[in-house]
Image 1 (tube, rainbow, N blue to C red):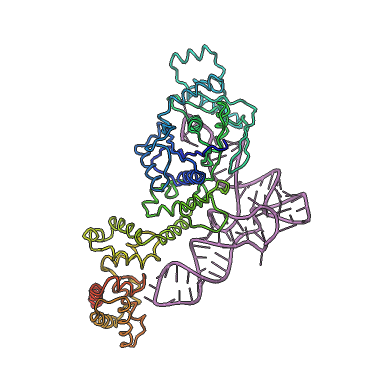
Image 2: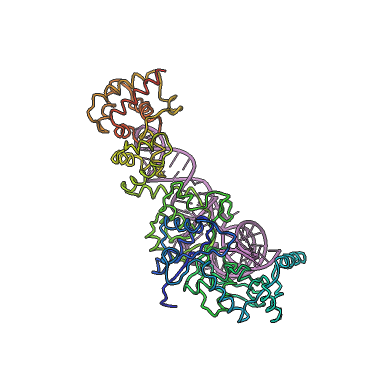
Length: 493
RNA sequence: GGCGCGUUCGUCUAGUGGCUUAGGACACCGCCCUCUCAAGGCGGGGAUCACGGGUUCGAAUCCCGUACGCGCUACCA
C-alpha cells in the first residue's frame, strides 16, 4: 500500500450530458491523480437499462475532453483493467455475487415487487423507524431455493447484513464515521435482469481496477457502509474514501436542472472559457489557504490537496464565474483571442457579419485592432462582436437617449466641419484624428467633449465603448466620413 | 419518520485556543482617473462566527445539547 501508485476514477452514469457537479468530482479526481503521479480512470456506470440514453457516453467524453480532463484509462483509450463499461462486465459481477452467496454473505431473494410493496406499506403503518427488507428469503430451505431456481422464478441477490454490528470507516474529508448495521437494508446486489446495482458493481470494479482513493459526491456517504460491508465480505482491502460536498442551487438544494444550467455543455455553448469553468469549479469546495483565486490547471495540479476540501456544500454563483471568465479572457494572448473571435464571428447571428467574414472583409490585422481596444471591456468572446457591432457594420440605428442628449440643431454643422477636416488627412493615425478634432474645437470655440460625443454617436450609434479616436482609427478615414454623411442625412430628416 | 453529514458577510471562503476591533474575493455603493463605457486605484456598507450550555485565564476554533439545512432511505446512480 505504501508505495502503491494512486489510482482514482470518475464513474458517471451516462445520463446524456456532463453535470457541473460531475465536472467538479472529475476535476478533483484528476487533480489528485496528477498531483500524486497517479492514474485517472474513466468508468461508465451503465447498469440501469431503463436509463439508457443514445449518445450519452460520447457526449460525456467530449465534455470531459473539452474541459481538459484527459483520462489515462477508460473508453476509447483502453487500459489493462477493462472493460471500462460496467454493462460489459456482467459475468464478473455474477462470479463475485456467487462467491458471496457461497460464503453466506448474500442470498437469493424471490420476493415479488408486490410483496415488497406490501411489506413497505405495512412497516409504514406500524411506524417502524426504518423500512427494511424482512430477510424472508434468507430462511428459505435449500430445496426451495433450488426448486425456484430450476423453475426460473425471477430472483435478485441480496446482501446479508448482520444485525447489531457497528460499521466504522474513515473519510479523508469528514473524519471518522460510524453506522449501525441495524439501519442498513439488505441491499439488492444483482437485479432480476442480471445487471448489478451500483453498490456491488462499484466495489468489485474499484477492487479489480486497483482504485486506491474513492473520491465522490456526498450523496454516496450514506451508502458507504454497504460498500464497506462488501469489501469486508470479500476480504478485500478498503480504498480510502473522500466524500465531496455538494454543489447547490441558490436556495441551497442540490444543484439541479430546474434552477438553471447544469450541463458543462450549456456553459461551453454560452461562451464560457474552459479555463474559467475549471478555475471556478475548483474553488467551489477547495482553497489553498491563501488569497489566490486565479488558477490555471497546472497550478491547480501543483497545489491541490484533499485535506483542504471543505465539508459544507457550495452555491454555484454565476457572478463569480462571470468575473473569472473575464479574468481568464484578459490573460489570453492576442493570437489566442483572434482565433476565438474568428470562430465566434462565423457563428454570428448579427446582421451580415458572418457573411462579411466569409467574404474576407475583416482581415486579421483589423480584428486584432478590435481585440486590443475591447479586451478590457468584455467578459465573453462574443462581446467582441455584440457590444461593438459598429466595427463590423455601419450603425443602422442610433441610441435614442444619446441622440436626445448629444445631437441638436448645431450638430450637422459640427459634423460637416469635422468631415472637412478629416477629408484633408492622409492615412490618419489615432493622433491625427485627435489633432484634427482639437483644431475644429478651437475653431468652433467648443469644448472637445461637445464634438466627441455627437461624433461617437454618429460613427458607432452608441454612447459607450473604447476611446473615440481608437474607433475612428480602426474604422479608417473613408468609413468615418461615410458614417458622418449618413448621420448628417438622418439629422436633416 | 429513520440514519448520516453540515452550519463564518447575499455568495465563495481565510481562520485548526491568544497575532482577530473576524481577513480576502465576487456582487453592491461612493470617490479618483476620464470623451463615454470598462479596466485600474482608493474608500464604504455588509458576519452578535446558527442558537444554548459547558471546558479554559482566554473559543469562530474543544465538548454536549437544540434548531435549521441538505443528502440517503429503489431490482437509480
